[in-house]
Length: 293
Image (cartoon, rainbow, N blue to C red; front, top):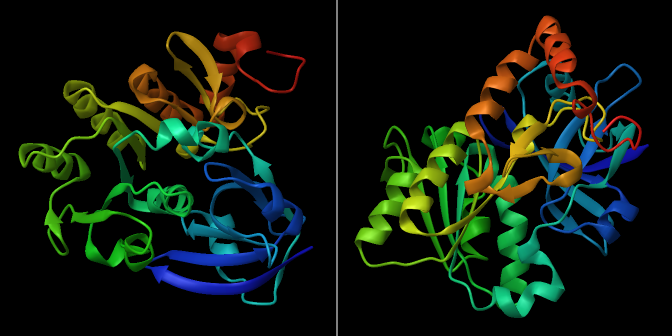
C-alpha cells in the first residue's frame, strides 16, 4: 500500500497528491509516468510524474476528475492509502538525461503546456533549471479557473507566458498564438516541447514545422494500460508502428500521424471499435509483451 502524504485542490476538478513510493522516487526522471490502482476494484490509471522528492521518497501526481475511477480517487484524503503505484514507466525525456546535458545547454528551449500538460512540463523545466539550463514556458488553458502551477513554473523557468482561450487571464489566445507573437517580436527557439491535448499538439507541430523548430510531443493522452498490452496507444511515427507507453511517451512531433491517432482514439472508445482495430491491426495491435508484436 502507498500512503498519500499530501492532497491539494489545484483548480476545478484538478487535484494534486504526494504519494510515498520510495523505489519509484529514487529511480524516476522527468518524462516518465506511473500506473495507479486505488483498490481491488479500481481500473489502472496512467499518470505522469509531476514532481518527486528522493529524500522523502514521494512522487507528486496531478489528476483531473473525468470518469468514475478518477472521481473515486479524488475522494481519497491525506493518510489514505493506494493499493498499486507502479513506476517509473516509459522513457525519460531526452532533455533530462545527464549524457545529453552539454548539447541541451546549447539550445534555446520553449515548452508549450496545454491544460493538464502543465504537470509533465514542470518536472522537465525544474530539472533543466537545476542543471543550469533556463527554458521559456508557455502555459495555456481554456479559462482562468483551470490554470495551476503558475508560481511554481515561474520559480524554475526563464520566462513564463500564460494564455487563456477566453482571455480571462494573461494573453488572449492559444499557445500557438503566443508562440507566433513571440516570433513576431524577434524571439527565436530551436527546440520545442509540446504537451497537452492531441489537437493542441497537432497545431503546435504545424506551426513549429513552419518556423523550423524541432518539436517533441508527449503521447500520454492516448495511454490506457501503460504496458503495451491493450493496444490503445498504438500510433504511427515516421511510418512505423510505435506504442506511447513502451516506446515513448515522447516522440518527434513532426513525424507523428496525429490525424490517424485522433481517429483511432474515437474508435477505441467503444468495444466494437476496439475489436475492429484488433482485427485490422493483427499482430501489431499490441506491443511490449514480447509475444505478439
